[in-house]
Length: 201
Ligand SMILES: [Zn+2]
Image 1 (cartoon, rainbow, N blue to C red):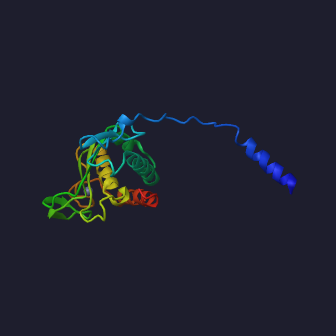
Image 2 (cartoon, rainbow, N blue to C red; image 1 turned 180 degrees about the vertical axis):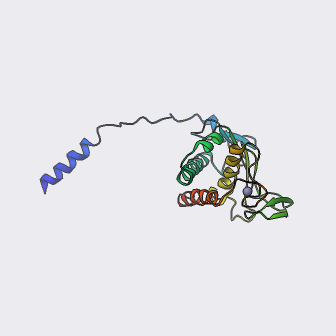
Image 3 (tube, protein in one colour; image 1 turned 90 degrees about the vertical axis):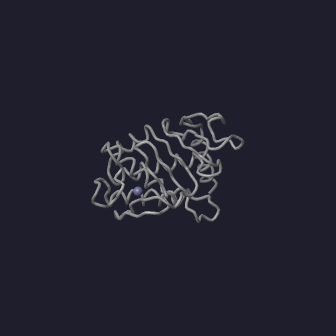
């Protein structure tokens, strides 16, 4: 018994000789974070993605670190479904995400099945293959919504489709007017949001 204990202790000591990894990058300076005392909105860098930025109307909501995890998760989910990440990486090479409050209610848009609706509020808009706006839902309990409840993954799909075809993000989703969107894209959204919701993100 004593021998086993000594063996265990020595194993622990042996396995803790020192770190064998390099902690990169070093912590960033505070000026690159959202400034609570600064004017709103603010544009801040998303860590780990040198060319992804986000516009925030409150430092409390959608912190940039959570956005970074959401993008990593989206990339992983896309790879699980499609087996490659080239198009996703192309979008992440130049992307601006704007987190806004609830949208107005006088927009026109297609639902996922391709039906056209007028006088509706939006959850998100993809303006190009490098610009996304995500709206909060109007009825959120305290408006601190998780990213998995937002339209971020959905809008990212539009941006990637846009990047691939160079002309549009397939605004009518599964409708027949524009090509691009498939049920597999819906699977990427579901996977992304399932992973994020578990983490409370
Ligand atoms: Zn859409």
